[in-house]
Length: 268
Ligand SMILES: [Zn+2]
Image (cartoon, rainbow, N blue to C red; front, side, top):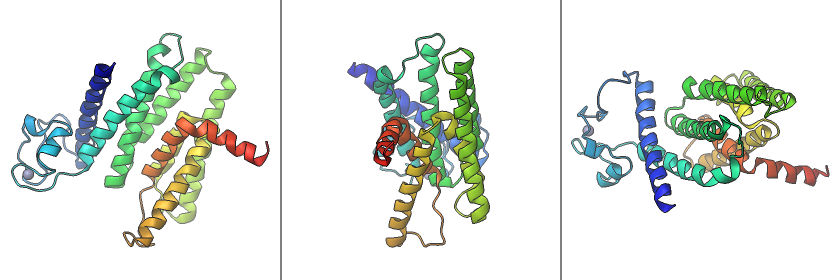
């Protein structure tokens, strides 16, 4: 079992490393198929032994072998988080993935792994570049819609539940759209609207609401800490994507329980 965990961890590292390349080339506009990675400072090609996920970063102590410039923390962080996600997915799988109808025996675990990887990438990319690329936001929305639609067609999910997922998506993105219009686009962007739509289709009701509340709470707390510690001024914005991602992943795991506790507290 331990060896399986280790192999899955290594697979996660490899996928995380691949995501780094995808994100970098997507945002710099470089052709995706154009040869080996280069150092963004001295433009030397990175040898395979300097390109091993996690290990190379540690061995090089976060600096390019040739020019000594710092390598972004984004690389090892995304690699490590993806690897952790893979291991967590493996552990949680036996409890969580219950669909026994083919092809959902493999579609269900694959769907959640893809969604997890996309959400991690969004958190890191928005934190680092301040954008939420459509590949991830619209991509997750399309994949989640097809997944839910497929479940409904197969009779695994009820039509009213499917409609509740769609309504959660529309409601969440509508809410963000109004927020943008009210604040004239300060802080939130249309990427957040698309992400909110995707979250609705992934989480449904009431977990979408839990995710949004958690995102705003953590966002407010971190924002206040940054302003008090003078890392940010009131006029500066903090990307909201990472908070939406943290809120979504938390709501996915604890959302149902949190909602029930809250409802009991209200006396329902
Ligand atoms: Zn260099």
